[in-house]
Amino acid sequence: MSAQHIRSIKTALISLSDKSGLETLATMLSEAGVRMLSTGNTAKKIRELGLDVTDVADVTGVAEMLDGRVKTLHPNIHGGILADRQKESHLRQLNDLNIHAIDLVAVNLYPFEKTAAKEDVSETALIENIDIGGPTMIRAAAKNHGDVVVLTDPQDYTRLGQELQEHQGTTLSFRRYLALKAFARTAQYDQHIVENLNLKLSQVEQPAAKELRYGENPHQKAWVLHSDDASVPLAQAVPLQGKALSYNNLLDADAAVFSLRCLTDGAPANKKGTVVIKHGSPCGAAWGDTSQAVWQDALSGDPQSAFGGIVATGFEVDGDTAALMAEIFLEVIVAPGFSQEAKDIFARKKNLRLLEIPTLLSAPLPEKQTRSVLGGVLKQNHDVPFTGLPNAQVVTERQPTPEEWAALDLAFRLCTPVRSNAITFTNATKLLGAGGGQTSRVDAVELAVKKSLQHDHILEGAAMGSDAFFPFPDGVEAAYAAGIRAVAQPGGSKKDNEVIARANELGMTMVFTGERHFRH
Image (cartoon, rainbow, N blue to C red; front, top):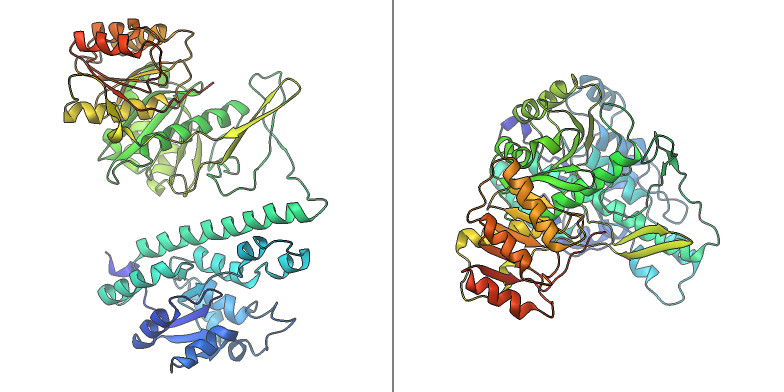
């Protein structure tokens, strides 16, 4: 870790509603020689531990007011948190105004969720438990995480101690981790407020619809409405460059994000993932150790279909990977981040949209999914990535080899985001071919075979994933004829025994996942 990224802690502001772990935190900071600032009961508890603490009111020169509604909302606090230590002008202003920099902010919020959970809670009680100063300090510290530590979870106190012991300060990677966690916490907190006040207040202003360039076709108008949940904020993402997003761009980007999460959720931490989407379905996907290799593997799945596609990656796109991506026409790239070198390379592609979503892999998927039908709206729980392949039931005489288990895991993960009837062929690292949107399962198998052979993929020994059961043995037979020797499917057909018997005759291995993943 570069020494220039280590930040020492000289002054900390602590204001806790949940005081669990306070003794550990305060003692640790005191032993490290850190000056502590605090408010109300938190300051009282720190003094009871026999430790020195300065009241925030002594820093602001203003006592708590309006029944505690205003405590920390003051330039002496927020100037100390938000000052960029790399800017001489900021440091001069702090010095001129006699404001001391604040290096750590430990805050958790008024217990709005607990209050809202009480039976017959009043609107007044709800409103009084909406924290204002806490989220403001959290967001300020998270924004300035290049210099400031933000703690919102007592479980991170121990790790802070490890950082201080090892580095005599904090690393940038630790501060980034805490900042993302802090933004997720304030988003979650605000979502609880919206949901609960919506039940109490007679009218809640709905978010305005934003008009898009056009709908599925240029003669159709289209709009997007932002949701207020804490899920992956795709609809709110603003392109770093390129044209405005269209209706189809957002639909395909949504499919790309879901496909990426199907690929990466629950996967080994060292596996980087990339997917390529065309018209709502994956045409390329891969996981591996290096971003460049993963991109090349994903593209190689179906480079013809990838032209004009939408890409989602689970890693920050660096310059080398950007140079490879820039060799093909793409509509949109979604990633947790882009290096400056990558941005400079992509800037030459004037129509390419870059969507930077830091919480792409950490934010939850939406809980609910809605679609319109003639005369009404359908609503269901959002589908979730399947991560249970290691627990699948082997139903054939032959057990999968370790290589086949890895390929089966990837195959069944990737059949979830493919339109039904869905079939995927994979090896242990990438998608070889997909057959989706077919009216019979054997047709889906034959399409996957055609797409795989079209790009010279070797299917001998590869695995097949199916989003639903095989009603007849013909789909398994067609896959075997192409070289497939391992199959993952949910099971549940009246003719499962016939399908299993045929797989045994062919010397194939087959596992039942017990979970169907239709996508219409």
